Amino acid sequence: METLEKKSAPQFAPIANSAAEWRQEMDRMAQSKVPSFFHIRGKLPLQGRTNSVLAASRYMNVVLKTYASGGENEIHAHSNEDHLFVVMQGAATFHGPRGETRDVARNDCVLVPAFAYYWFLAKEGEPLVMLRVGAAIDPDSDILARVDTEGKPFDGYSEKNKEKPYILSEEKWFE
Image 1: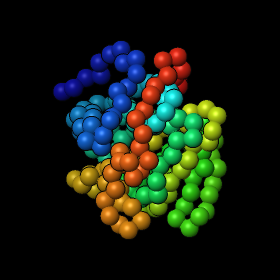
Image 2: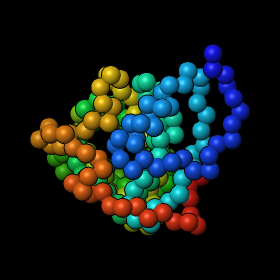
Image 3: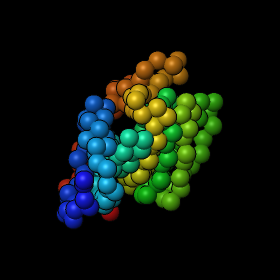
């Protein structure tokens, strides 16, 4: 039987550099059958964006997402996951498939049901930091599956999704 061990938290959660790394980290964490404890802390990007898996179970995952000022992604939907964004720092404009927009800032939340199309753009000024909590619809299928507006598979780490190599600040982090 696993026990609740007192462990010192890592200084910064590792950054997943691909969907495969994100899945691998979720799978590893989901093996635990005791509560997970984590601290929300991450280096801020000067360029690009990061995804750091903080905790995961078979049905749920918690990820710290950071975007450099002006960072963005492309319109997409998640086919096997409902998820929630909690804006912890910065601001963004969320866009829907018909040109609708909504500005969000610190302490605003966005619930995105499976198959809801969206994209967002981080506002200029300070990096965008969001806590992302995802819930699997079918935990036996790919929780990170996403599709483009034509319903075709869409890699979140692709150039099509406006992925740029991240450069992290050594002096600034979110906590």
